[in-house]
Image: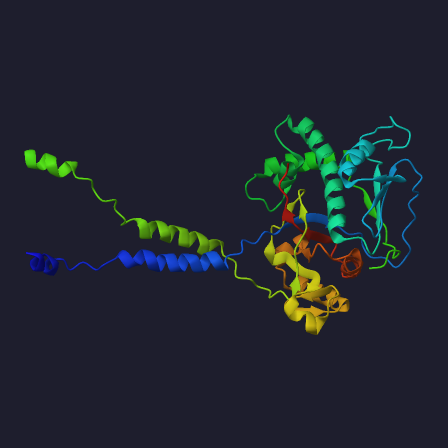
Length: 201
Length: 155
């Protein structure tokens, strides 16, 4: 009986298929590096041989941030922790002339950043991140007003991208107009001074 | 009748016939998302974390500049000071300008306006070398840069 049964089944044994697939899977799991191409976007000023015009740091429209080689922050002459930076930057930009030592209006506000050649890159990125966060929070408020609470500044900016295929021309035009308006209201003016070499690298 | 009932009550084995299919689906997923590393890194590049991130949309229009300390293996050759890596070789900072121009030349015409330089810098590096590279980029007229970072979870 048993012999007859085994002779009758001529199917190919497929149970090892799973093992083969598992081996391949493990190979790809190990070699995979999901490439995260994300980061902080930053614009550089065009190169010029001339000395840049000096920024008057005593001017009230300028928020002065200094970072030394020990990664300590001095904001408007006061020692400050990096966690307070976002708040004070927002206060500075959206001051509208209320406090005497902050900016007159958001479109006139400037953030001046000067670091040392010995400042760590990590701190530099944290500062850039906080400044960006401050600006984008304020821009989001404006975007909220313009779009009636539907869109953030980032969404508007994405939708205005001429190479974006998810939006049609009409939407693009609208988003572009909004984007221009917000940029005019709250321009991101971050001035970076040439770093000094006090603390050594 | 009784016999048929008895057969139905027996606990059936769980069929494993679909297991290979499931594994294959997983396999295809990983095959598709896998990016074989293009550049062999000679430097330790552990980028810092940040929250305000933008994504680089067009990889064809991106030039990569790596800055970091040489890895343990390469320390005998290149020392311990932070260095610059372009493509798969460690280069002096004077090589940054010609490299950027070369990559810019390879960008397809429709994407020239989207040209961006991705700076992959180790978090333990000091700003001195980064500033030098930034100056070189300004000279090369590559004004859009992206400080490559990891995603920091928002509290």
